[in-house]
Length: 72
Image (tube, rainbow, N blue to C red):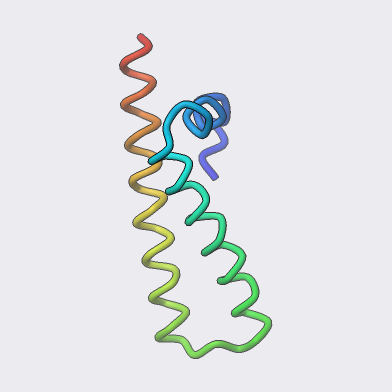
């Protein structure tokens, strides 16, 4: 996820508890979605998980961009 921000993500996970929480939730959803594919979860529930994961990714991305701009 967001490989071009790998260094920033590492810093924010340590420095920002909100970021760390979002990142942990995103990772947990990623695992749940992967498992759902094997367990044949219904499409509506799976779609809901994917939307939630995408929303978290958008928020994580915004925080990375803001951090990058603040450092410039």
